[in-house]
Structures are given as structure tokens and as C-alpha cells.
Length: 485
Picture 1 (cartoon, rainbow, N blue to C red):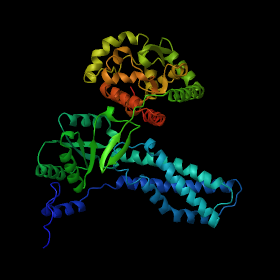
Picture 2 (cartoon, helix red, strand yellow):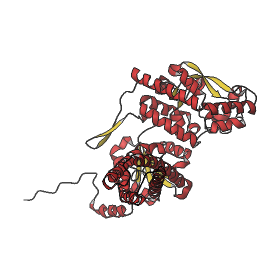
Picture 3 (cartoon, rainbow, N blue to C red):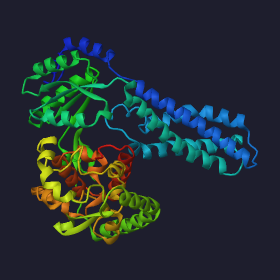
Picture 4 (cartoon, rainbow, N blue to C red):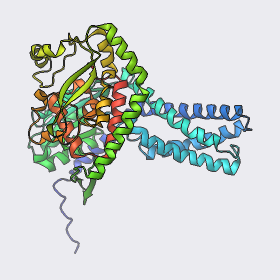
């Protein structure tokens, strides 16, 4: 006698849903324009790199068979795309909301290195290059630089609305959707546009299907789900339903303070787990960080000395007052120190601070952080210094003296530092930094509450690798002149 068929689990979709799910698979909304831009940029970068390498090798008097090199590169070009896809330079590009050259450096170096080794093997087999290593080495360096540059240009094209903005639906417990909406509003370069907001209720699975249908009827590209920890099974079911309908789903698990750079993502029988360990700096870590600070500050002061001299002369000619601005700030363990910056304001600017406090709070919606987009105290030349963060360069002297670090939380005046209470007071466990999370992710556009959360995540998850990443992100933000005023 045959055994009865086992019952379907509660989460399984009923049979009559199969047709609808299959139809959804055919209706996947994938915008391939951006990946195509990256393919074009990478192809041009490789072609230009090859052309320059052939020209240089020929000019230095080495014999080279340009046709054979071109044929070899052409045969290996599909290999480049395969390697680049495997490391995530294409397939994962469209999933990331915020993408910059900093996020791609490691992947590009890996992909170009693998491709260059294959070129070298072909050279040894088919003698595409002469025996010397000039050609392969130069090609490797050129292609890395050109691919990174080409991708920067491709993103600029995309951000100028050549690609349509991505339409977003937000699902979460009130008032959590406001958090996402505010961040999207501060970053138009992300190309996101909130189309609708939905409350994540405690409905049964049929209610979730109705919610997924309503979202699917909108012409949205992705859905952001915030929180929903009270209904983990329902949330996971909603994610499954949305993915089946061809939508990209972003799960926002928590605030900035829950992001740890030293965390490890793994799973327990398929259940995602993020493990975090204590990251209090050991004596060895402190020594390494201090050596890095001394090295970078010394070279920084030496390399920027012409800029420092030029800025000092211009400040003196621009307005009456001293060249440098000095102010007591909150340092490591709450100890005071005097920060040194180029003066970008009128001489009595600090005395006018209290008078403008109310205007700053009104402009920033009651935010504690004192920042005015059009500060009347800023001089004409001072605004130029601020746009490029040149006014911060004298703080390299604070770093050399040991009062600051190259990377760390923003040094705050005591009236602002005292507002970082509770667990966020941990930001003073490390030295304040010339660069850091606030400077890297948006500078003046980030409100005080979000800034101290970023600082906490930096302190709690410190690593030297994170310092390097934040330093590069800060340089990128400065050259992009994002959030500078």
C-alpha cells in the first residue's frame, strides 16, 4: 500500500501559485545599462593599455610583434570578462547602492593580475613579447590604472541621469522608513528615488503575498526592508516573494552602530550569522597606528609645504587676522588639546558662534552639530580652502605631536562632544582623526546623531585595514567636494 504524500510545509507556495511565479521569473526587471557601461570602459582601458605598452616598448628600441600581441590580447579578452565577473566587477555591481573606486581597487588588482599572468604565459609560449619583463609589467600597471579610471568615468555618466534613477519601495516599522528616506535625500549621486512606503505588519502569509503584489505592481527596481525582527519568518517570506517577482531586495539590519568592520559573516545551517569580537586596541596595535601616523604626517607636511605656504600668504592678503585658527577640542579620553587649522573665517568668528547657534539648529532641523551651508563668517578665500579641505592640513602637526591620528573620529568642541553620551562616549577611547567616518561618508551633510553612531562603529570595529579604507574614502570625498562647507 503506497504511503500518503507528505504535507507541504506552511511556507511552501500552493500549486496555483506556480504559474504566477514562473511568469514573474520572465518579468525580472534588470537594468543592464550600467554593467554594459562598465564592459565598454574595461574594454577601452585594455585596448589603450596595450597600445601604450606596444608604443613604449617599440620606442625603447625593443623588437615587438604588435600584430601577435593584439591577437593574443583579443583571444584573452573573454578571459578578462570571465575573471572580472567571478570577482564581482560585473554581476555584483548593480546590487551595490553606493559604489566608488575604493570598493573596486582590490577586485580590479586581482582580476588584472590574473589576466596579466595569462598574457605572460602566452608570451612565453608564443613569444608575443620579447624576453624582457618591461612589456608585461608596464601592461599590468597601466591596465590597473586605466580600468579604475574608466570605471570612475562610467559611474559619472550613470550619475548624470543617462541611466534612469532607480525607483525604490521602502517597507518597515514606522518611523524607520524616515531613516532611509533621509539618507537617500542626502545622496543624490546614488540615483535612488523613493516611490512608496509600506508598513510591515503582522499579517499571515496571504497578507504578505498581497503586499508583494502591491509592490510588484509599482514600477520599482528594488525594495528596502528595514527591521522586521519581530516577524523574522514573515520577513523572510516577504523577501522570497519579492525576489521571485524580479526585484532587488535590500535588508537593512540596524543603524550605523551595528556595523563592525572586523565582523565575520557565516551561517548556521543556512541561517546568516554575523560574529563580532572585542576590538580594544592592544599595545602592539597602538604602536603600529602611531608609527603610521608619524610616517604619514611627516611626508604629508613635506609634500604639502608649497600648498601650506601659498595658503598662508593668501589668507594674510585676503582678510585681517592670524593665519592659523586655534581652538580647544576634546581629545583621547576626554583630554583637551588645541587643534590647529588655517583660518577660513573673520577674526572674531568664535565669538559669533553662540549668536549663530539658533540659525544652525533651525537649518539642520535641531541638530547638535554646528554647521551652516552659508556661514556669514567664512571669508571668500576661506570658502575655497574649505571646499578642498586645505584648511585641515595644519592638523598634520597635531598628528605629529601625538594629539590626533591620521584616521579617527572627528575632533569636537566640548559643547558638542558632551552630547555623545552612553555607549557613544566610547568615541573618545581613540585619538580624534584628520580623516574618519564622518569625513569619508558625507562630511557636513551627516547629522550629529548619525556621526556619533559612525564613530562608535569605527571604535568598536577598529582595524588597520579599516583605517586605510577610510583614508582612501576621505580622499575620494575631498576630491568629489561632497559635503564641504
